[in-house]
Image (cartoon, rainbow, N blue to C red):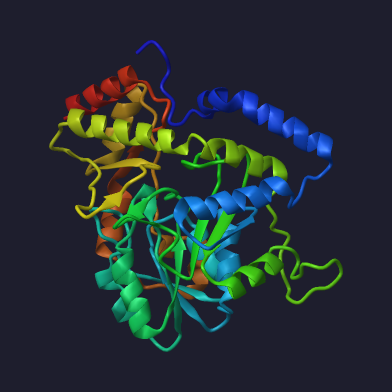
Length: 367
């Protein structure tokens, strides 16, 4: 390979929409309307139409989307929320930030998502919600999780930070539960040029409450109904996301094409490629995560061959120092195993075929 391979290349994606983005940003700067203007309103409308929710409420990060959703459901001190131990820390962090306790159920080692069969044993009178994560772009077994929520009268908050465009049985993630929470962090498949987030819901009452919570607890200046947050998506970021939404279907097709090339090219018994569920679901491949037993040796081999990689995630959340006060005694077998074996290799729409071929050939030669 003559050209250096990157784990993700935002500059190439910017080039394809630069004229539109630059024009929109200049118009916003000239307008003097930088917060909660027409671009935010248009984005919220188009986002709902794309995924099939009644309402979309923007905010300033995927983390805040989770926090605001928990607050909108009055989940707090003394409550428990069941979630995945194999995800980014923000999922559990949001639960702690509202005063509740994260409870972890083991994952399915094939999909990396929380295994619905492991959830019910953790439900008790303190349990108020289940927060599954649609990790790496593939939906969790959300229909089964929703049945559990209905059975036990629990709320359902979907962490869709990595799954915009993903579907389960032709229905978009973020439309199964009380809320869907999305992130627009730059490296997400639908990302902006900073931080941003979105919450989806079909509840008019909850939509109104969320709009107040994101704006210091009220919609009328100097009138505050709740202790809220300063969590508003700005106009510039909204305009960038709108520009990307125009090409998102094409970007998704490119990600899936790359994933299928990897699937056809990588052939090494020491490496396990991503598993796709067999129902009518759609994986958006926010990451392409493989498993290998001797990860240290394997990643050194990748480094030697100039192939970048990421490790999502090397430590189960219940082992993070920040949660030591909960004194978890978890030893979740699948999570412990996967955190030692997972390696993510480059996948982004602009990744060239020669790079994909080179990465696959290098992996195939690993022994």
